[in-house]
Length: 154
Image 1 (tube, one colour):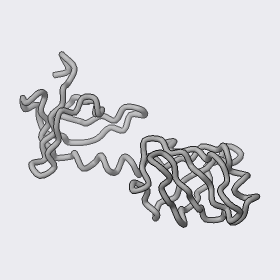
Image 2 (cartoon, one colour; image 1 turned 90 degrees about the horizontal axis):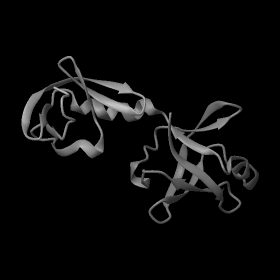
Image 3 (cartoon, rainbow, N blue to C red; image 1 turned 90 degrees about the vertical axis):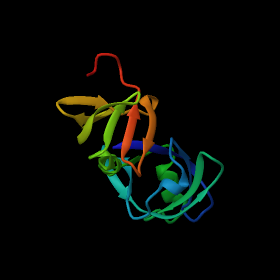
Image 4 (spheres, rainbow, N blue to C red; image 1 turned 60 degrees about the vertical axis):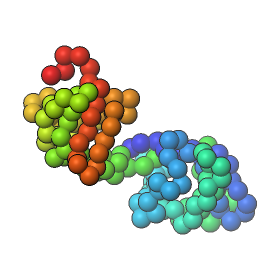
């Protein structure tokens, strides 16, 4: 699970809540996929019925099953999670890409290793960290990814 937001406060009497967003924008939400809020140590799924941006880092959200002020108040202060497996699926787009290290061909990406907190590309028998700070360029049309890799990795 990946924490993407926190419920800040209720908004009105119909169950809407103000959600503070972490590194995600309103456009990035897939309304077909549930969000999760923890109750008694277990993630409980909620679907977004409506969402409206409120500035760059907040949104007014109506979740399924949260239909009144009392329901909204019960989730205030709670973290909002997204199933991390959904995020990992997007990274599979790099399989088959040519990997460069500062313009020098390293090899072809043959797989993804979703190590918690550090997604890695598999190139030959080497795990290559995939972090935004290492990306020099990415060309989806040519399927080329150029990274600034740490010395001695290859």
